[in-house]
Structures are given as structure tokens and as C-alpha cells.
Image 1 (tube, rainbow, N blue to C red):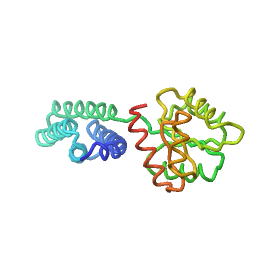
Image 2 (cartoon, rainbow, N blue to C red; image 1 turned 180 degrees about the horizontal axis):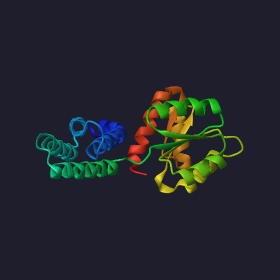
Image 3 (cartoon, helix red, strand yellow; image 1 turned 180 degrees about the vertical axis):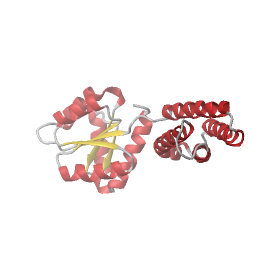
Length: 224
């Protein structure tokens, strides 16, 4: 499995894995169906971790599964206690895998464009905030710390250079600024170089391409 595919599935694994650990621990500490319920949850979790190449987590889940089996077969209180410890340690390890939220601010004076782009980004797993003016975008960038800002090149009442500079001041080096416009790539590239933006994408290319460009720019920037 490639790192990109693993990264896309990891948030779901963290959420589901946490739920499986919670159900297993509830069973071990007195829930109905213990230890069979706990053993089943750990067995499934081991398989899911293995698919993602998370070998250490898979091994931990298998170890907990064995303790549940011993508890079921021999009625050992010590095995039950070891199973509970294994599940708690597994849950803690899964929580540490939670990636930082993927965030993008869409700054466009057209609410329709912002909504369309935002909907597609959310479908791709991004948290999205939209702004129709620079002051709102600055506040969002400063307080919310997105990885990427999609910046419309034709904001009313402000030059592109000023909009880019103020966005950079608000977000620092951690934010990637991507120019967004219906202009051609060549024209947008010239604008980006002139104002110090990190990249560009044309609306004409389609919303799917916009999402791909946001992904690529965030990956190049690294963790927020």
C-alpha cells in the first residue's frame, strides 16, 4: 500500500479502531458477550491494521486476542486483566496515529464558487472555511491555521499583491497560497511568480483538478 493511500484511509482507521477498542474494553470489564465480543473486535482490528501495513498495531491486537482466548478457555482472571491492559495500550497507540486536520480556506468573492469548491474538498476529507473578503480570510488563516488558502485573483478593493502579502502575514511559512482564477495556467503562473504565491490552479480545469492541486500543495508543505 502506498503512503498516499495509507494517509487517506488513516483517519477512518483511527476513528473505527478507537470504537473497536472501546467495545472490546466494555466487554472485558463486564459487558455482555465477553470475552467473545472483545476477541472478535480485536481480531477485526488486527486485520484492518495489517491491511494498512501497521504491523506493530496488528501484533498488539493479536496479542490481546490471545489473552481473550485464554480467558475464555480457562477462566483466568489474570488473562482478563492482561487483555484489558492490551486494549488500553492499543487504544493509546491508535490515538497517536491521528493525523492533524486537513484544512483549507477558500477566499472568493463569489459564494457560489466557494460553495462548489468547498463541497468537493469536503468530499475529499478536508475541513473547509469560506470567505468572501480578505479581512475574514485573514482572521480564519490566523486562528484556524489551514494548510492551504485558495485565493481568488480578482478580489474587489484590493490588489492581488496585497491580498497575497496579508494572507502570508496571517499564516506564516506554514500556509501554502494557491491562486484561483478562470485565467489560463500561463497567466496564473505569471501572477503567482509576481506576488510570491506558492502555486495556482485554473477554475476552467474543473473542480476535481482544484482538489488535486490542493492535495499536492499540502503534501509539499508537510504537516501543519
